[in-house]
Length: 111
Image (tube, rainbow, N blue to C red; front, side):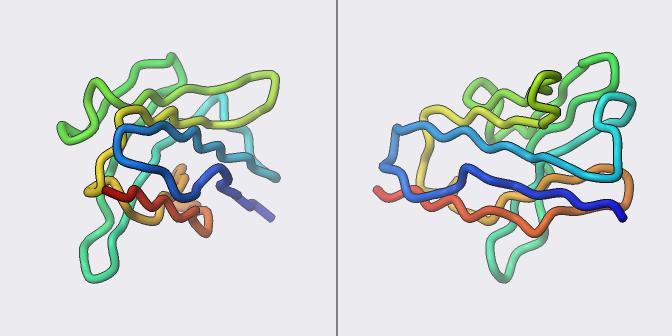
């Protein structure tokens, strides 16, 4: 059974940083494109960043230059380093690969 689990969310002030991590069981991260999404209640889920098996990355325009997606091979995790956070980054953040999703971790950025 495949499970993805996000961690690292929390409350941070505007301009602050957070690092999210996604770990999994029953699935290999290294040979798949993996993504972070986020969702605000009432809005569609938005793709934030993705990383391919050969480590190419793509970012939403709204986070370009502030967020960095990476794999940690030692921890077997997918990470999202978020810097210079803004109140409009507030959302539930999800880890995704293929048709699998985690349950999300809440990020709240206060002004």
